[in-house]
Image (cartoon, rainbow, N blue to C red; front, side, top):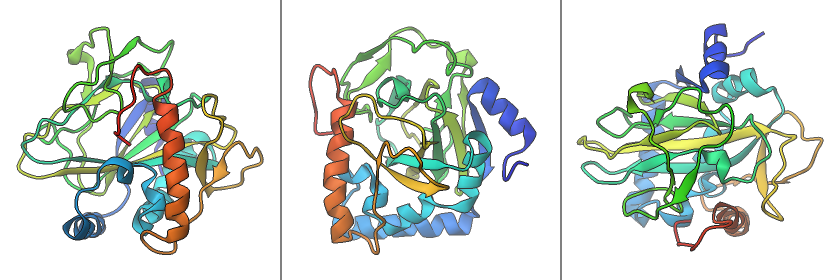
Amino acid sequence: MLKCLTDEQVTKYRRDGFTFPVRAMDSTRAAAYRQQLERFEAEKGPVEGALRNKAHLLFLWVDELMRNDRILDAVADLIGDDILCWNTFFWIKEPQTESYVSWHQDLNYWGLDTDDLITVWLALSPATPQSGCMSVLPGSHRGEFMPHEDMYTDGNMLTRGQEITVEVDESKTVAMALRPGEISMHNGRLAHASPPNTSTDRRIGVSFHYMPTKTRQIIGDWDSAALVRGEDIYGHFTHTPRPTRDFDPATVAFHSKASEAVKEILFHGAKKVTQAL
């Protein structure tokens, strides 16, 4: 019996590689999480560089979101009840700026031997075509990976500016607009991208990357993930500790090692390494 998604949503996800929108929380609660982020930014500055990556080790409220029962119920409907979260990541586009994400397929770079990784993208502000919401290419999660090239283009939010080198037919793509508190879900093999934010508000999202516990890391010698539901009988990943407060010294220390490991994985085989993470 499904916990959150409808039969139609599950069918669509299997066929097209994505489904949206799914209501994870009401807009008031989403606004409260946005306020926590923006209070931190007001005091400490932008969430950039390494702060964007493995954010659940730094911010108690991101750890809380990663374990949100509504989100995990939706993920469990697709991959079962034994769930790891490999990474959490901030995606923030300021209004009237040129930041964008090129067309790419994540699992081409992440070293994870699964076809069942699910990216959950939670909107903390309106994600619209004007603010640069994500677009996806239905069905592109099936078959071989599309060819990519590292472009390192200015404004590209990806680590190495990775970009699909064959033309993507924009007429076949779908823009996944979300209201605050809604999520989209897409397969880690699915081609996706997002344009600049031309609106007058920030576009703030947090992504959570969930996978079955049987998944292995096949590029890096060491990797970590959070056990967020069920049990892990495989032990392929070191489980991340839970913070007791924002910037808990114990999890900050673990974050340094974990984020460096992710950086090495993401830049594996790259011509150059940047300070993006």
